[in-house]
Length: 267
Ligand SMILES: Nc1ncnc2c1ncn2[C@@H]1O[C@H](COP(=O)(O)OP(=O)(O)OP(=O)(O)O)[C@@H](O)[C@H]1O
Image (tube, rainbow, N blue to C red):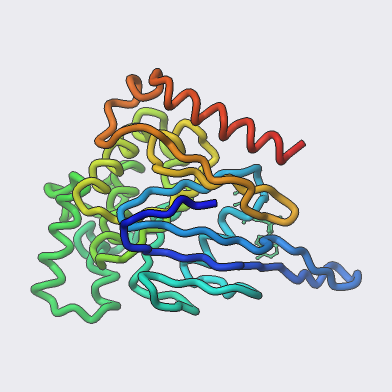
């Protein structure tokens, strides 16, 4: 169960269940229960990773929290308010940045602010600040095709941050990047979290990434997806560089526990 905490609750997921109906190829329609009775809480400034075997429902859960899917049952609260659909209080970063190719980096970051109807001058300022925050202050005029994969993902992150969401939802955001760029972005995400105190839900397959980034790791079991356990990561913040952290006994212990819990459920 999630530990209690003095910090304000940013996200409360209460008894969420969801299934998909498929209208198969001439056969009888079927229903698959994908998530069952999921409950957890995230506190302000926390990074919580969601891990579990492929198909256990991590992305489905993130899409429900993002309001892209309506759960069959259960309730979601963001900063105490019940939410039933998408909103600018939650921003999602996917594996691909999906930038608009005809817009510069700055204009891409402005996109969410346009939806929020922020006036032009303020929009540009906020977009510039967000680009600076992700280390791309000098690249505002560049178009997506002129940027590397890592830089495009940074622009996607800036676009999400610019609207100043309560919660950042990240679905394997670094998994398409090479190992070195991935590590750079992990370090930058921790730095960003320290500067902005954003609450971050982070879906990943990579246990090292989950432990390095997170305060807690939510382990889901499959068929149907359900919360098996929540593992606390007992590493201080700010975190040292990845190599030092990975050799820290607390890192090794947390990684072992998470790996064991995933296997225990998958057996
Ligand atoms: N739109 C959909 N229609 C029908 N079934 C779906 C749909 N989306 C997901 N599923 C099924 O729900 C289950 C969970 O999928 P989901 O993508 O959430 O899992 P995941 O844990 O994120 O997987 P992975 O780790 O492989 O990305 C899978 O069995 C998948 O086939």
